[in-house]
Amino acid sequence: MSVLEKLNAEGIIALENKYGAHNYHPLPVVLNRGEGVYVWDVDGKKYYDFLSAYSAVNQGHCHPKIVGAMMKQAQTLTLTSRAFFNDQLGPYEEFVTKYFGFDKVLPMNTGAEAVETALKLCRKWAYEVKGVAEHEAQIIVCDGNFHGRTTTIISFSNDENARKNFGPYTEGFIKIAYDDLEALETVLKSSKNIAGFLVEPIQGEAGVYTPTDEYMMRAKELCNQYNVLFIADEIQTGIARTGSLLAVCGNCSCEKQCERQETYATPDILILGKALSGGAYPVSAVLANDAIMNVIKPGQHGSTFGGNPIAAAVAIAALEVVNEEHLIQNARVLGKLFRSKLNEYIHTSNIAVLVRGRGLLNAIVINDTEESDTAWNICMALRDNGLLAKPTHGNIIRFAPPLVMNEAQLLDCVAIIIKTLKQFEK
Image (cartoon, rainbow, N blue to C red; front, side, top):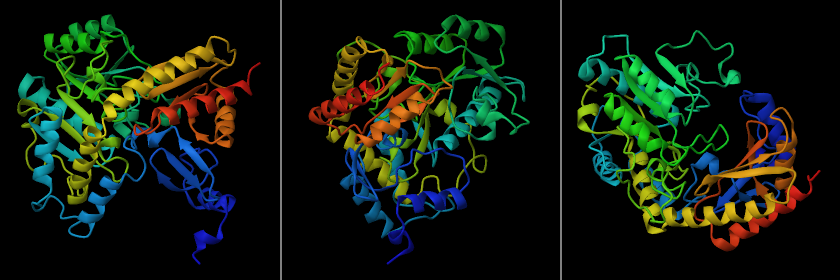
């Protein structure tokens, strides 16, 4: 019997607390198995997963097609680095660029790596194509953003917990209010040194803040007008989560069951991660057309694991599942149902203020301060009632189940959420 088999949940948590860095504050539940929309803890209790590893598991836990692709490739060739060609990367690059409608892809591993890649790409384009003087390029970002926790990214973060005592910070960023076109245009007018505008189509970590319907489209038009790159961070919102392939093309209120990115707000640079692998393997990507991507030359950017054979095989399988199982349409239909049912309850509630979101990326705002522990306590009660979720920003609870969920399961989850909230009515 292994050491882990001898330990109960409390013992496993104690090991993490003793030997692991304390850079997360997990809900006290120890998971050891997942399938579809469900996870099980070490005691065998079954839960609905309403976080989906921050939307990495859109295709459901341990999807057989994705796991099968990973296992098959792992038994053949795992890693060559980019020092050599491998027989999986080229087919993947063709597949993913055609899937999203771009000329080229730069493969990476994690979301933060992909954001860093996009920032470097944007700056290099500004100097070599737009003609900005070297070291003078500025990139516009939004208040409330979350793009990762590397040194460069925290330099333009509002999260003081992620920033404090990690300086000195990287310069070259201008922050503006989110969902504020006037603020964007003011900065675009102010300088010829603006290289790009980095934006989340929905601010997930900030509490699932959804912009006005026209924001993405008008922001893209302004970027075009001022010759600035529109950079969409779709690491959490992309790949069917919001009821369209990409959230930048899903801000309209039309009923069309989008399956491909349209001309609504096509990014100049698209950043993907998380569900690009269905949660089976670290895979991220930066996509752009030749006029932008061709500024990168050999030796100027790379990654030992970026574009490895397993990642390539897994990503193709993960994207095929999105189409084969109609996850875009399912997220759109079930998201509307979720918000409708929660709104019916909120009209009579004094603990939940509102529900917001798009597709199956949603959040409820709890009637308490950000400093309170009410949302945390609600999530603990949800856990006890068989559903796992986590607060974000103190008084907001994010709900993002795997997109393979069916209507009966969703309604069961709605019942659990409402039952739990009623325990906290004042």
